[in-house]
Image (cartoon, rainbow, N blue to C red; front, side, top):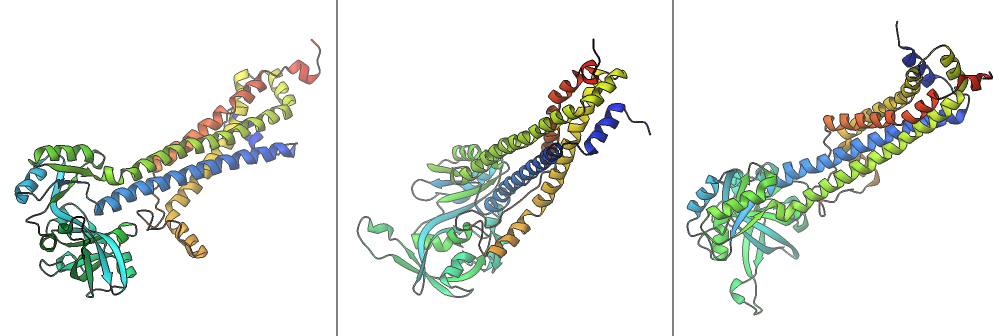
Length: 414
């Protein structure tokens, strides 16, 4: 089978044992270094992609994309206001709500909580919290029954099960600065949701009509809505604010949770740069390997030159030898990285069981597991970049090899 001379000799040099065992060690170290760099970069970026996906697909299915809230009082005509919100470009759906903070009490146990009083009939237009309800459903949340749906963490903290009663302590709005006993509202637990993160311990849901009675309101004082482009949520919220003829606070997930997205993007960028530098350092081992290989093969190079081998063919021999190391290292790293990235969540879960401790706490982070999403295109780019860097690392030794003088190496005089 025909093979170009440079490719044949380059591949043969790559597989051959070196006279100096240190050269073989450096060669293996370069392959291992490239493999580890590529593997860690793919796994790290997959984890960041996973966090980004979890933020988009989990947290933002529970937290509304954007909201408008009355500065004072309630909407004069909530239905008209909702129609105006839904008529705004890029808005997919809207629902009224009332936000209130209180203290839940069950016997001697207490838990502070943010409660969203929602309309069960239209809440699915904006959020998908219903898919996380493990026990009960929106249908059980009836007007006038003083019922509540809580996160699993809150229910466990208070020792509650479905159907049990508890109390909600609300500050008296009329008390001003005077010390006054809180308003006590009896509630019944009709549902438990579990998303697996901070939301489970900070958020509860009740019927909007019950909240209106508790707070003595005529209507809802806020409207939540869903948009078609979450990264433009703040701008769309401003457009909604201009379309509604009320004095409003304008909020979006970017103002409340945007730091998470920015942190993920920053870590992803830093990781990309830092770990590519790690791969670059590993590629410099190829320079050391080839420099020593050229010194070892000086006689062979001189003989090839006397036989008429061109300078470019000689350079290509050592470029092939170094590129082979880079290719092997890049492919091994890519395969290992892809495998770990695809199984990262289960591997970390297994590790957590072994050490008996959770790496990510749902009380601190918005999720309590390490997510991963492998981007094959991203993995291909990383592998290609590592290979290109390894090829670039071969250029200096290859040029040095082509400048060897046959007469001097073979002992002939001028």
